[in-house]
Image (tube, rainbow, N blue to C red):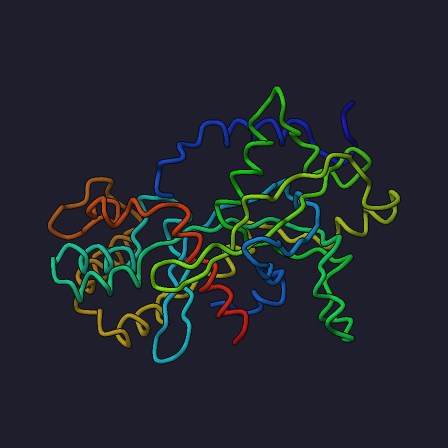
Length: 318
């Protein structure tokens, strides 16, 4: 039975897009944190902390989106830079080029710097919070999450579970995972802690997270309409995180890596000014981030998610 809340054609196109994705392709906060749901806290190795909510499409028909970013500590401050490859993998990104050149230098110190600047991926979607156990810890209604729509920025471990329901035409829940009505299914996030690594680090483990077994509406039709009005246009949200060129240049100089990337930066600015970008870029002028040694680029999804999670948690706590 077709839902009145989901555009089936839009979902079908989205479903095909996800099916065609190749999983092995590498894929300024402003008021960002006001819109974003705080990352779930992890439990213990044996006992998870549990959160529940519903993914929703935005008013433009976007279900969820992927973006790339660079995040690092600079002068005791966390810096977040949206990667230009979010919009097209052929786009020039000074931080990707910087990390590439540093890594390819062969120097251990430079390789460590390269890892600091390397590109990371994240997903974002509109998320109606059904149950956030942290609400009981505050009396401030503004700080509570239950009953609100926030942006949920989630790692690939969570995305793989969502994508499986989207792409499995035979057994997956399909569009119902985004349906706010009676056919919709909540997503139950269960976050355990991993066992400590050799250097003592502990990370969140989402392996037990599942979709609910029974569908439930988020409210009456009138209530659902009000809920949907709270959604954020995901593409606009991602674009709002872009750092302008002047601030990007300032940051590159403050990190003392400007000399590494200045030639490519200036060449790219000239191309933008001419409004014609050549697809064939000289190997001498640009080092592609995707050309780095496999030991660097083919970092496991799990390890990327883990470091990513800790970085974002630290940013939230500032």
